[in-house]
Image 1: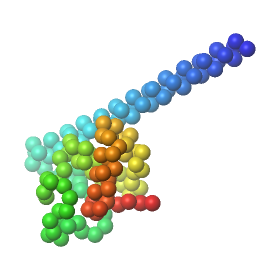
Image 2: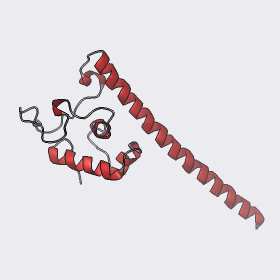
Image 3: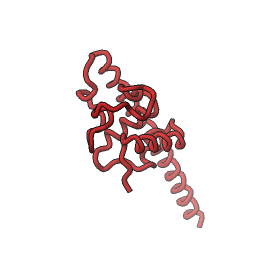
Length: 138
C-alpha cells in the first residue's frame, strides 16, 4: 500500500508542477505579445510607417465605421487615432483584431491580458460592441 501512496504523491507533485509551468508559460506568452505590440507601435512611430504595414491594422470587417463615413467617433477620448497601443483598451483592440474570423472567447481574452481586471475587460468589450468596434458572437 505504501508503494501506491508514493505513486499518488508523485502524481500529485508532477501535476502541480505542470500546472505551475503552464501558468508561467501563459504569463510569459502574454508578456511577449505585449512586447511585440509595443515594439511594432514604436517602429511605426519612429519610421513614420502606416500601422497597417506592420500588422497592427484596424478591423476591416463589416460596414464602414463612423470615421470612414466622416462621422465623429462615439467612444473614447483619443479622437481619430484611437486608444494608445500600450493601454489596456489598445492591447484588447489589437488582440481582437489579430484573432481572425474565429474571434476569441472571454476566458481567452482574460488569459491573454492577465494584468487587466476582468471588470475593465468587460467594460471595454461592452463599449466596443456598442460602438461597432467589435462583434459579439453567440
